Image (cartoon, rainbow, N blue to C red):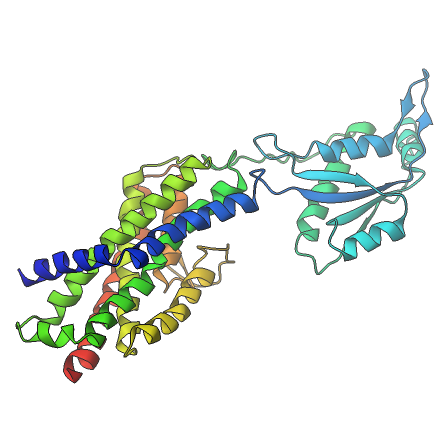
Length: 389
């Protein structure tokens, strides 16, 4: 029962240090709030600068064809699945003015519609001979937003031209979003990663709490009671897992209050958070093995925190680098990091509405990695601090 005694002792110490506990619990909800501020409209909009040189032409019957204006309207109708605008057009007077704005990142691309655009459309519809008109795209190729915006604008222009000319398309493209993903705002897409980030913060608590025992001499007194390393670290880890679950729930509550809608069962997300907490605590124990003071532990813990945050996809999406395939699953470069699997699992559950059966692979990976990291932390701690005491 020594493990239970350490567990209760650790809970009491966590409660006494209200400042550290509060910072751990409040940090993730604050991050959720910041992301909500970053994306206030719920979805990112991309600016398209338009230099419309088109000259409208009169058709038979007296109607006027304004191809340039119609293209701009077609671009405005490119929206998200929930009808929120995706592309926003801004008219410009000259190309030089537009290029200055592009260099200042006050726009993602420039669309130049030539003077003969409408005349070409009319000539093509009334003649068997195809006419030609050049629509120009201008953009900063180092701007990561230029390529996707150019593709969307090009698709809108092409669709308009096809509609005016009246030629049928041999292939029809149809987009079908996965369940629950069609009407999600950009803020909601970041929430699963932010919930994982709430758990990642435990790396500070795990390392600093354990080193505090060493620094205060408490560890030596506990050893006199014939307490094993598993009793000490298991009890401390269990208490920190509860803190991690509470932190995840607070971050989830903050996200819901700011407009997040979960599509799947919350209890599965809690299970994912608990397993991730165990692995993060294991890393915290490793940090404690190389720390003699709480200040050292705090400084060293920043390194695994940065690795978890930037390479697991919890704070920012990461491109997947597949190394090989195993049992039909791709094994990526960052799959050694438990939060990577946690982000994927929470995305499936909270965004796509999947259940436990759909995240068994991620859960299995989390179980294995959590046991490995925690066991490594216990082993290292026993060989450093416990033998040295």
